[in-house]
Length: 162
Image 1 (cartoon, rainbow, N blue to C red):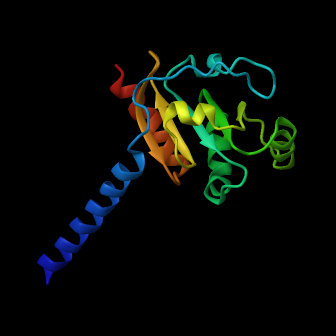
Image 2: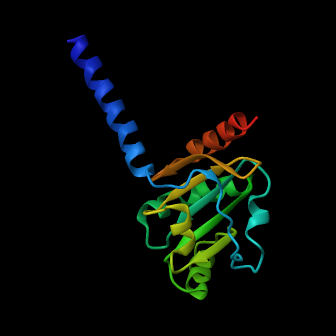
């Protein structure tokens, strides 16, 4: 009976890691593609990502999982350098209204046409990129991530890049 339980747990772990590999395939790795577009506040997006480790968070106002992650992302953004990218979420006024309604003060680049997402290989949101101080993407994640999961990835990015 113990062997069956052990095999079951190994199978579940394999499915989880296999699933992560499957959903992360196609995401850009290596050097971070530049984000030339400005944030909704009119600031250059790249200085938001110049200190490492940092996070780039792709999200959408229509994404249910992104809404579940908002409090965690908001908490993390108070402590860590990051930029967020609103993917296909409407014009600047719509995204600004969405942020204001939810009292979110994130640095947001509006990617209404999905061009930035395409450069990063993002096919679905939420997608997270963890970048070191040299501008290299060290870790990626697609789908729900807890605040502690994001903080752990930031910490690991700092360790890996040393």
